[in-house]
Length: 305
Image (cartoon, helix red, strand yellow):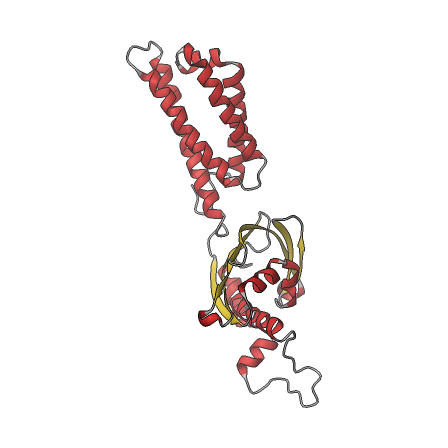
């Protein structure tokens, strides 16, 4: 297995699709040709009814895998089903079974498939919380906002509100109850785009997400809303992982130019604090005595980033 989240030359999603079709094919054989399959794997003929039940399970797993964009749970269900298959075959490995050599070969094949199922489930589970690939950058920051967790959750959960305080976002278009399309400002006046899906959505507590395949910038993260001590507002915590364009070199250049996502996220949270507490952002543009920069570096970082 490669370190970039692939199994051989296949991504976890591609491997899952292959396993899904394999499940359906095996299930159909178990349901419609149990006699021939029993003979092939060295099982006793009286187990044909049990084979049909196993076939129904295989088809259900296959359909579940093929109809989900990221079928983590269904792939893990295959691992449980593999354990049932191994238990079934163990009964055919007795010394009084003249077909035990066939049963041994079938058991070896199921062990191999179980290993694939386990690796695929492991990679899908890992990918649901962080973007695949090396060179991921981690961000963690927080701010206290004088509003309730319920209000903050409602505001953030309407993703079309995010460009109001995230200066680098151009637009967010909700495409389904769990998916959305994002457009952000990229380097040299370009735009970067990606599709994202919600991984966790616990009202008034946490929203987590991950980008889908084909993203210009692979990313994943979570925002948590925690009531501050003494009911003095809400602590908004953002944890995020992303793989910058150009890898570590692109990340270093962005920091030199003052455009690092780490800085942007921190400033965005201060903008969120402003828009919810005061209803507007602090600005100096258009003021008669406005300077190109103020005497407060922190203020400049906040309103001019």
